[in-house]
Length: 215
Image (cartoon, rainbow, N blue to C red; front, side):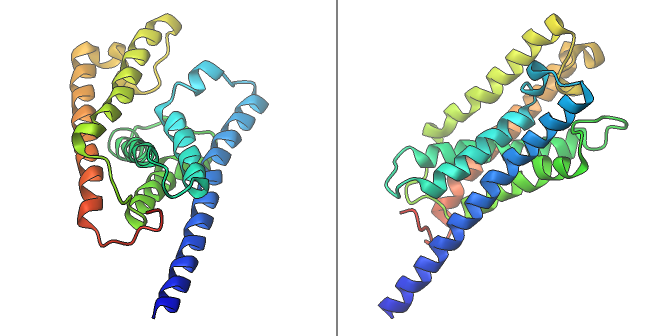
């Protein structure tokens, strides 16, 4: 029984590492594809491109998956990184599906498969990775509230930079379209959703069967 269990865990570990390596490369590959296509078209603006929350969260998510695949199992800060990256990419997927996907003539990606990869596949991958291999010592909610700092800083950055360059990454952050009240309402809603996601992501590992291979 012990030998069979050991072999099963080794096979599962190998599978998880392969999954993380593949997914960790797929997200950044989609980002690189976007850059290449935009440069080829002569429309690449590094400042605007890197100001998309989608791009930032996918870069972080890809890096986190690669780090998780290679990091020792006793890396104490890894659960915090994984939890934050999962929260941000889940936010990307939910916000795009609820606020952006139905906007007519809005183009957020230059290649159709990139849109699917960045807005749908990678958010699902991060959540699945968290559920398949929850950390043995998951972050507690009070210690995870700092995850909110980055989205709040992102909103502040977008609102400060927007009038300077006359460009906003997303319509719901553009006060010219909805006024600052509209931006505040949308921002409050997104903040509440991120807080709920933070709670859920910290709650889940303690209510899932013990199956982690990174314990």
